[in-house]
Length: 67
Length: 197
Image (cartoon, rainbow over all chains, first blue to last red; front, top):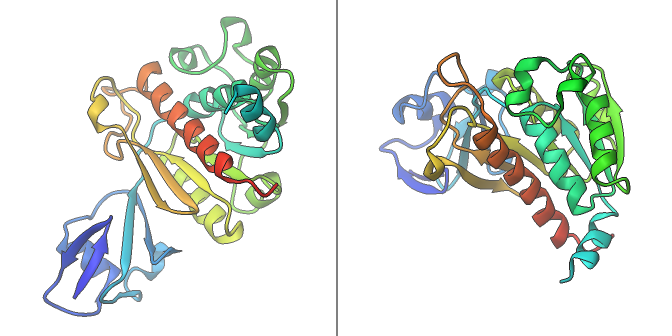
C-alpha cells in the first residue's frame, strides 16, 4: 500500500498495518509524539488497534521539551 | 493593507495562550503589539531569576505569578489588548473551560508530556479550534532547522521538532523567541484569512 507520511509518499509491502507496525517499520519509536490519521487524532492506547490503509494521510508530530 | 486596518481586524479576536514562559510570554507580547483584542493567558508558575534568559519579564518581577506579570507588561505595550490571566495548573478538565470562546489556542508549555496532554484535550474537546504548537526550541544556532508545518486546519507546528531542552542544551532567548514569534505569526495569518466575524 501507499500512504502519505508527513506529506511524503511511502510504500509498504503489506496492506493494512497497525500504527505501531508503521512506527516500527519506519523506525519512528521512542519519542514523545502525536499521530493524526486523515485529520483524526489517534490516542496512544489505540496504536495497536488502529489500522492504516492504502491512501491514508498519516501525520506524526514530535514533541520536544523546552519553551 | 494598512496597519491600522490590520489592527482593527485583529481586535475582534481572542487567543488562548497555554503557558507564560519563554514561548507564551514572547508570543503574547507579539500578539498584543499586533492588536489582538483579547488574550487568555494561563500559567500557575512564579518568575525565577533563571527565567530572565528568555522570558518577557523584568528583574523587579521576580517572585510574581507569570500570568499576572505578563498582564502588567502587556498593559504597558498595548493597553487596548484585554488580558484575562488565569493562575491555575492546566489539565484535561479545565482547559476547555478556561479557553472557551478563544478563536485560536497557542501551546506554550515547557514539558513534552504537557504538550501532548494539551493537544489531546484541545483536538478532541474543542473541535475546529486551531492549535499552534511550539516543539524544538532548545540550544542556539541551527537556524536552518527551525520550521513551520501545517498539519491540517486545526494543527500547526513551529520549531525544529528535534532538539529537546536539557542541561547542556538549555532553552535560550534567540531560538525560543524565534519560535514564539513564528507561533504569533501563524495565529495572525489564520485570523487575517478569517473574514466572517
